Length: 493
Image (cartoon, rainbow, N blue to C red):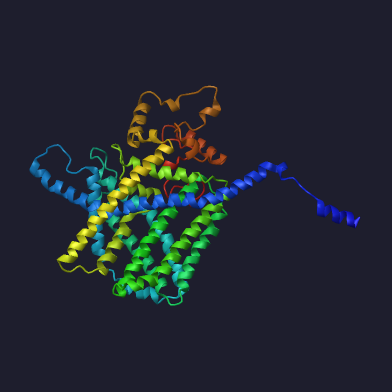
């Protein structure tokens, strides 16, 4: 009996083709994980250049647009153009951004970077690690509320005067915006200073701890349920975080090079640490997204949809009926607000580089022209690439949709007269009357993620209670409606 058992165990066989579907699915998961790094880096690269375009706009085109707006403001009374607006809404927003940058820069000149550096350097390693984590959380909170403050200022300054006054005034909103940009710039400065201290520490223990914090992010994200909308938010957050880290590393290198009298040999001393930080960031993002897509059964093709959604923002901002500037669109979508980061970089560069003599001014002028050239070339390439992505996703018809204000005015007019087509009564169809009735786009089949049944019940109940009040919400959210801080499901990722 024993020999028979041993013989059976040695010669026993099985047939994998009897469960072909299961093993095929496992193999596809492996292939999906292998595709994730390539697809993710395509999205990250595209998003990086989107952030770079919005960031360069602050340094290049925004000053020129402010000068043109001020010239129009000065020459318009001389031209005698009666009945026309002094400034167009976009010009008003540009002037406000320019004044915010000038005021905040004058306030930042009173902040002593050297004193801040030595104050942070005197703290213990564990305390600095806790401070850095707190700064990351505060940065997200500032970004979420900061764009609302700026949008409120722009709308308050450009709102049609015939409307009933429902705000506290332009000046209070302007002061809130100045205070926000200044405080956010100080916050990013403390982050950069902490990173600088980590680079200059002798045993590199702080830098190692800060890098290990990226791997803790894997633990907090991988073992959670994700849907496509949540993953889109996380991808936007990763793009913004990676670009911000590049700027922080640039600031650290500038400060260190200044301390060593711009000795190029010291740059090679910093180079290994810079590569280590960037490599750890890329590795963490790849591992995190690979396992999130594996555990939640999400295809790698979803990153192409995310790319198309970001490209749609860029293309739609170039339309004649555009209702927002592209840099503001990036701010809402990714949570990346370029004003505080640009302000800090200007402050660091002006304090690190001394301009003396006509030759220095010529170098600055050539550098500025080079930045304008880079901005224009980057914008042209991005616009062409975005058009390709939008066509591949078959989203061209969305470009010709009317702005939200036109849609809302039409809905108001229809509500006053004939009822909307989506609100027509349907007798003997109770299930159909309780369902959300807003029109759906053709791209909802691949740009939306269905919610749970409980959410449908809540939305249906709200629809019945609101009546002619607020519009009923759809149980699905289009990717084009999701920004960095939209709640998808039960959390913001």
